[in-house]
Image (cartoon, rainbow, N blue to C red; front, side, top):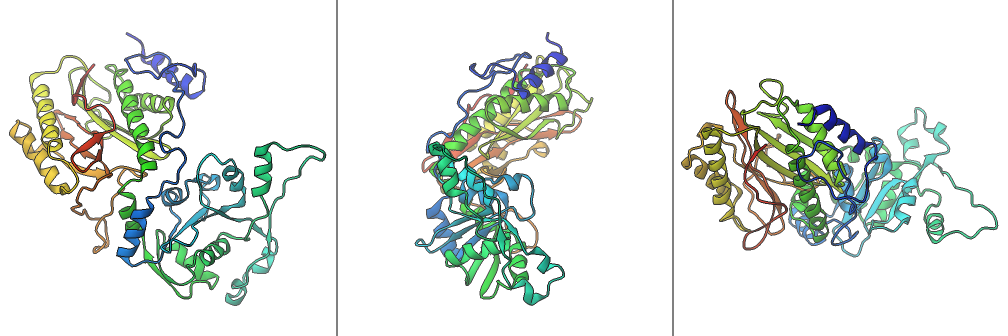
Length: 463
């Protein structure tokens, strides 16, 4: 049996990029070196904008809004296919995106003008950039009056020099053509320019962050705009995926399951939650996914003995993302031969999944499917008090769907399944003092059933 220190050494080698890049990813139990995938590219509908435009227009019409403004990084990426570097640096106002209901109007990415280099590479479809730089007369705005704030600052920015008497490559020329001086001095004034071009200087506009309203009010540019809280509107749009999104999520979901199973098969008695999470992180990275979270134990990180113990069942719930699109996968794990009660509960969990999947399709309500799975498990012998049966969408967020807007806190809605929703049916069973199990698979809803984004394997994994 391989020692845990060897397992972690192999994972660390992956993170350092010291493994062969031309080998297949690890798929079987192996505590040695993790092999890197070679196909980490945009698959399918290569590089197309992610936003589901027909659905966006329909939802905006239904909600009676003239446009959208995004500040949330998830929604900016969704509308523009771009995650600006300054967003990763966590600038307060790193980027905005606009989307007009008027189909004749352009939609914009508003961010640091430095992002022009990335966009000029032309490796994917993006929204037009309105860049901001810096205010050269910023001293004029120290303790500025309300009237002074309404005056747009003078804009400055960096212009890179070009070597004389040289022929630029096509890519270099593209960079220079796009990387001009910024359009506005500040994020707020760049947003004003985008709204003007988009025909959104007046009207009813949904924003995913009400700081947008405060920002425009501060410079006296909010007159004529009715700002509507828009987080749920974005979620209503995003919960049904475009073909470009589905292409990414098929890869992300499969990568996530493969990484989770590879990590599970490397588990040994005595391993801690941190060691299991570390292994999953490395397996996900080897396939081109980024770790979101990993649960292992009875609940998150909870092993009753502080470590995995032979014969004591526990759950794993693994989430990682590919090009920002999440996979979600869960199973029941037992080290060594499972006892009769473990087998009984694993069988009941599988029966619940099969009962739900036999009827799942577009047009069914979430609550109906959840209840079918729950009742089938109880009938098969699962203790009713241990069962959790819950549907949630999966996409750019672990849960992409909207919640109720008629209360001031998140409350669940009984949604109806629609074609091209990507969901999981969460079926964990948790019994403190006994152990836990899980059964979760990523699927796309179709008119007549579903498409699995992974292998519908047995809920119980024995190692």
